[in-house]
Image 1 (cartoon, helix red, strand yellow):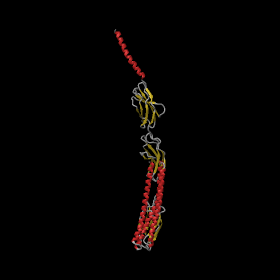
Image 2 (image 1 turned 30 degrees about the horizontal axis):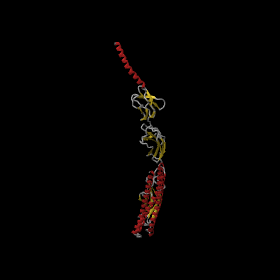
Image 3 (image 1 turned 90 degrees about the vertical axis):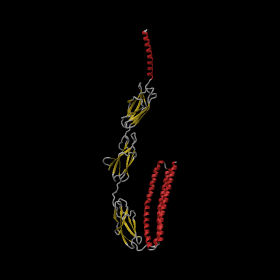
Length: 471
């Protein structure tokens, strides 16, 4: 019985053990390696690091994924090699200590107790590097003190944006390059180099910066500043002439110096009988009326020119003599006609300028209306140049007229004063002539005011047309 009992117990125990053992083997035989991860992505975050991310395999929990095998292909060529076997279920990985500017390709496989599953899709990225060099650098002379630079952005930013440029210059186009701007700290591709020496050659090169470092240099570009002539005193005025305009006034006229000393004339110094009566006229006008003189008296004059350097030599001395009598009634009568002539002359000049300006503005407005968006800026720039040329064309004429009118007014005062003192005319006559002169000034102001108003209306019309077209 004992033996039988032991045998029964043993049989029962064996039976109990056999069933679980058979079930466990069935479980193991049904489990397989994990499916492939999906959506693998590689992103460079620096010059030495690429971050990976992916999606876990379908039913990763059921497959009992315990980690991932990460494979790498340096330079994105050749065969994959094992980079790491992780022991976590994390679906991200940071690959560090890489080489700058190199392409790396990756794939990921899931791991469980059975083995390594199929690999994911492949993903590649290149670590950040310095940008490539700037291109097409040009240097353009602007003046005796300035050269402007212009270049094209690098073809390759190195994976991260260009954030500035380094500019070097070789003075006199010889010797070593010197840094004039370590980092512009902006993405502008133009630079104005100022404070240079006139008539000097300069050579430039440019480097691009990004967060990683500095590129190789661009091509070299060379330019020479304009040569400024040496400044000197002007030569003496020529052709000095002195003529009597009344019994107490003499008019001086002369020619501008043949050599202005490479600096504009700023005024004239006038001597009478060896004594300076005007130190500096402060104008380029080449005439002067000397009033308050004695009847039938001889005076000797000479003139010298001022420029930024100083006062040049005097002209030859010229003698003039005042008249022996005061103004005649006929001269007084001619004043009114003279005033009318000045008004007519000014109006002709002003009307020509106004007509040309308005015509140019209208033509520009029509061109802008019918132009494409990309052509409008060029058309507007051309119009500004045209209007500037018209303004400059009439500027000198208007200035000369104003100078002539000022002299005419001063001469008129002399004639009127003498005539009134000699009782040829009365105070009322003087008042009438002065009123005519004042009327000239008022008409000029009125014309200019109307012109400005007309220009303002044209600008409004231009803006309205542009707004209507945009709508």
